[in-house]
Length: 368
Ligand code: FNR
Image 1: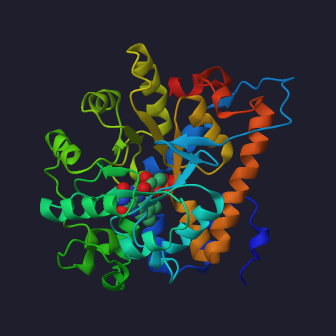
Image 2 (image 1 turned 90 degrees about the vertical axis):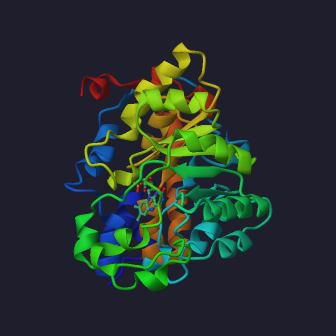
């Protein structure tokens, strides 16, 4: 008794359908957050603490929310972020995101732990479609170097190094489900044997190097000309350090609430980061992205008003894919775009350049 796709009117609708139709173990892996899932919930709550200060009597007949990300023109300020193990939700896996992203002219970030092989996802690209690579850094740097050089050779336009996961967080829902199919669901683990007793996440992550540090950044710079973006930065001084390290961007993120419980929401960190950058005149030295809990175009607009270049979206696209395949992801993206157009009109903005801090009231956010 699956509801028709047309009955999904917003991104949250996909979640309730996915919850009913997905395999329990897969649902557990996608939906879980760390520990008591306080951060996962806060990712949503934090957006609710920001209100708009809409402008009226602006000619909003024509609204344009296209923008650029790391030099690539995109039709809307969101991208498909990296989420591991796409085949847990749909037999075709992440290639579905490649197709939907193409249809909508947005960027797909390919995860290190994709179910489809990296080359399969690159081969599925069409025309001038752009993809980025999310990197989990292997203890064996020779493997990491091979992955990075291969990604650049195959045309990836950004290297997103995940920095919030020296150890995978405790996702107890996932651990309880003692994931059984994981061995067949992932391609690129980096070789270590798979221990299935601790859930999907633990089983596939033992190759990740907990010794990764700022000292490694120059080495990444030396092996690639792709823009380097640190994914999972969570405080102002680390953003400043990222500027000093010469990287091209940061993603403020707590990994969808799957790592450190009680880590702050990205939107809250963003509200502190941008003033600190502006104070130093550094706001154009790197691009700042956020992810976590983005479900409505109003969330996207809030992030852009506060200075983000774009937002990443994870679970909603996983749920849309799991429930309805490529048509689901296609519709989810279209719904977001429809919401974007309406949201921009109703706050009195005609282009991304119009979105500035004066359009949001962050007193509730900053008061806690
Ligand atoms: C993730 N995320 C993630 N991040 C990363 O850098 N490498 C990865 O392999 C994964 N895998 C992954 C799997 C699943 C099932 C989820 C839900 C998330 C984190 C992801 O990139 C992003 O930070 C969050 O998903 C954003 O939050 P929302 O949009 O899911 O609320």
